[in-house]
Length: 110
Image (cartoon, rainbow, N blue to C red; front, side, top):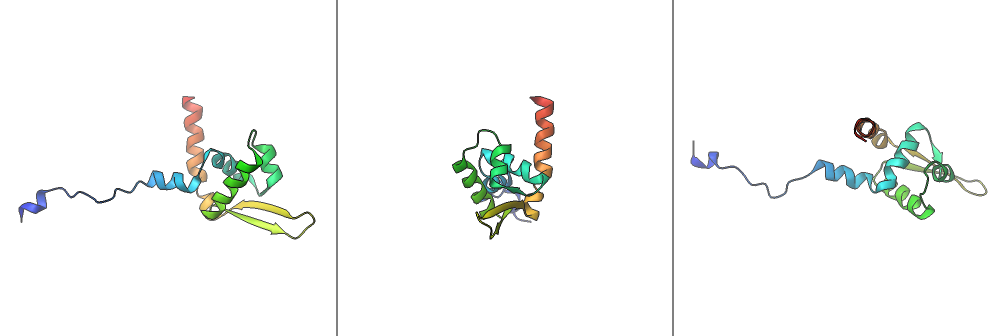
């Protein structure tokens, strides 16, 4: 055995999975959007009514970000005016346990 086996290795990059998760989820409105979509599919107007104080611009940005990350799907129906529904993908549904734990923590400590 050589002496080099006893020298700890310095990784070039330390990946943080928590940071990766936060990058996927996005900003502060994403948690509230996810909360509403865990229940059922929602339309834009429903989400806006259910999430107090979110501006249309912030909601649109959040929905686009979550869609680009593969967390939710946007379904467009050819009606007049166009109807758009949002629903979670399996990747999005998998976030439910994380948000549930955050809810339990908040109930305990805040």
